[in-house]
Length: 366
Ligand code: DOR
Ligand code: ZN
Image (cartoon, rainbow, N blue to C red; front, side, top):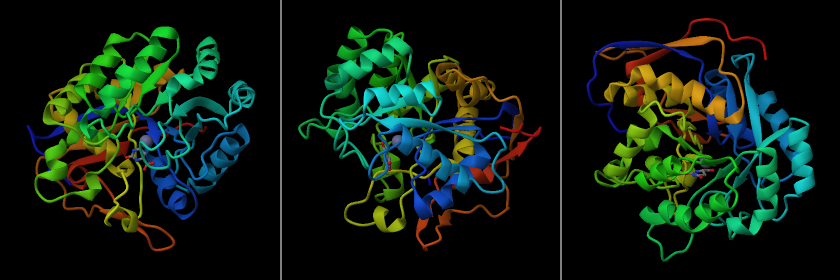
């Protein structure tokens, strides 16, 4: 992990309980290993549908929601709620999708450009190709979640977010200005500017894009644990993301993009993109905000802005985050092991040694 660095010192702050507006919980043994962690840490979790095969129907979303709740474990918050999205591709039946929204099972659609990232093979070739569905979403104020990365191999990997936004998302936003869009896991200054330039657009930001730049990934030994999509970008891009998250603007909120992969998929010749950060996402963002001198704006980012965008009340119970100058000697796990023996490395161990998170009041029943 990148060392926690910066202003340091001791600090303490109280927040409404946080939500995670972008998480991968997977299925089977991996779901069983990671769902309890998200369920004890976050109240709402907007769950990504990029399973194999992807979640394209309301029935599949409802079945997956139940599997998640079955795995949430005894320490889950009583009000832990998976918020489901459907995978937007040619298999999505718009009538089924809208029925899913009307019945409260489904809340959003997620667009992946085919080939952009893990389990995106069944995604789309052109966002504009889905304009009929997008029009119906705009009419009903249903959020569109976008993995904003060009897939044209001629575009440099560091420029893919900007390129997608300029060539694919901008025309859609101009044609449907009332469509509510989240540019997921913002990774560049261009992405931040795109959100600020477009009234109907919001941006989620991950702990790892806030805490690391590409030198952390590449400069001191290649770090597969920091490999994700969109790729962690330059120091200037990271500064823009930190400035956006800590600005107090309600257009930015936390989506961890916690994306567990077994070690066997992370450390070979074809390392898969994805960073498992759910256990220590809150310590990592607390450290970023503390280093920026903006701890008093952390609550808006973790617990308020996303609720406002997705149409929920913020949590009524509160947590306390405490930073201890010398750190803690208490053991901090650096991985989880699944029931079939796979190891998944956890991001944010250094920050977890500095920050303790405690519940101040009991979470209400769901
Ligand atoms: O790094 C990533 N991993 N980015 C994504 O968009 C997908 C995710 C995954 O599912 O592993
Ligand atoms: Zn993701």
